[in-house]
Image (cartoon, rainbow, N blue to C red):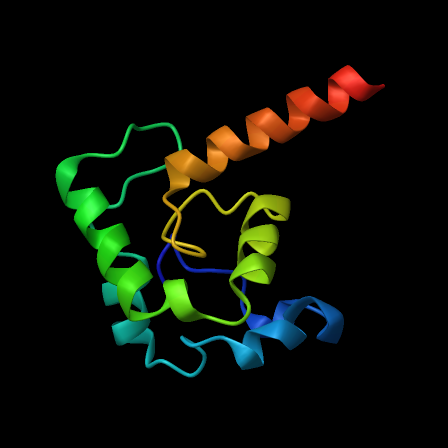
Length: 111
């Protein structure tokens, strides 16, 4: 498992990964998962996406994420667990970082 791999299910409690069994991508072979969700052209959360990165996101989104019944749970998991690599819920790392900053700013303005 590379540095970009998600948290193994064994390290998550039942409530945290129960939704994953309903995901369109559930049960993919690890190599196939990496091909779609962790392609080499997808950079970290601090890099603006390039043309090839957007193509990779669109491929994963069309093949899996856009019609996945647990897309919202996937995005929430990625945001709550600072998943700064790979494609989660059809979003790139840079997009999720921007979402987290926006959420943090909004929470701060409420308090």
